[in-house]
Image 1 (cartoon, one colour):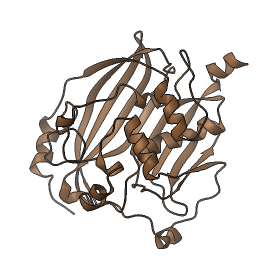
Image 2 (image 1 turned 90 degrees about the vertical axis):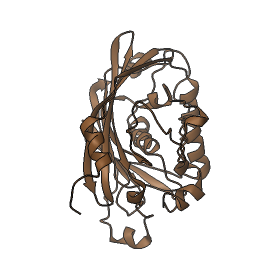
Image 3 (image 1 turned 30 degrees about the vertical axis):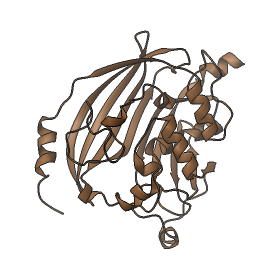
Image 4 (image 1 turned 90 degrees about the horizontal axis):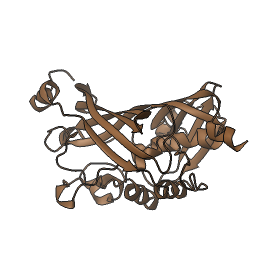
Length: 304
């Protein structure tokens, strides 16, 4: 496919910018306790002073638009960090994190957010608008976490989804070697609904099967990109609990769908681990990398 970006894409890339925004909120234990239940794991945090696992700050500082502000797809029609692209389709493309110090229950956290990049790219299904957001999280003026999110926008005509992995596609995929870290997760509609509620995510592709299949062309409900990223981070949390995650990067490669059980796998190398999740025998839907800080975590040291 050749040519130049559509006029709306080019105009946004050339001229759309927003002012930084600052949001402040106390961190409570209840959301992390709820997410622990979604993963069928013991409660991750019990009370004030306990550290949130990496990226679990996604359960806090949520955008909570009024019902009248939502579009047909369940996303807000307009917003400070939403590009003025008519009838846009939104996907979570990837992200990068640096963890300086943990965010803890009881902290008053300030998030400073800004758009750092707007660009267009021609993909296999049409033109894409790629927006990168940077969030910095502070507690009492001290930087705790830096996060960058890559958000991908399409126009509806270009919104055809990758089909569900078939037995034929799995058979054709290169078999992966056994991974030292592994567990499986079944994203049935109940789990997807609970995660949508926990993160205040009203995107209908995650809970409205008729909309997901009939309007956006997916074969079934779509597993949330953030849920998949958090599933990757379950690997070091479960298999290397004494190690501190210093950084995390991930990339969404293909959607995964309900109710197909997927496998989450990790290969540690001493300095960190390579992570992935996907259907057995198929190419992964998401890949990621964690690096560890040298030495034990502060919480582990305090417990010994």
